Image (cartoon, protein in one colour):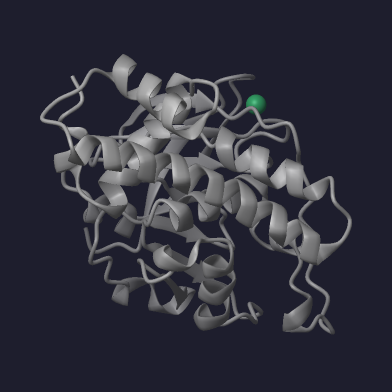
Length: 273
Ligand SMILES: [Zn+2]
């Protein structure tokens, strides 16, 4: 595949309108097997819907998933006078888009590398964005995988060393999404934070929710380390008992498994029967 873009015909799963899209070839060339997920925002295929398309590595459409998010912020042009220190939650969402922002949070918490293709007018450095990302994590998790920025003219030189990274094109607003989970956890954090007006307080809310989650995951890890095997049901019961908290649901449980796999090793979660 030497062409920079591959033309793919995409149909909206809701209203059935279709459009042909240019998908960067790098998306297909990086993954030899498995499914590629790409997020299609409103206005790209049809004016009203956003969804995720699943492709095989040949670029054939294999399926669709509707994205149903309760909060949507309009995308707006960035203000030229905006200074870096003022990069608030709302601004981040307007720069990246709502779903894209949830994805960035997920990548940060669950330690996926991030590759962002930026336009000429993008004014934030990768250093700065990594610093912001780290600010929502407990100290011990801040040394993980990082975010990399590329200019569109450098598309050919992008080396995605880890094929399971998040790829985001700020101009075309598409993603390669390496995980299976829905982004309800991230949606919930952002919505809770947005209820608070003060920017510093918003960050506290972020840190608090992420830290609570990490504690549950560490508790699960601690239990798994001391056992040869354990059932999902018993593990959930044990976490609840140790942390004096109600039992977590299956979605939360899957997040914990993902966290342990990404941040520690799948050898622990393989013990779950
Ligand atoms: Zn539609």
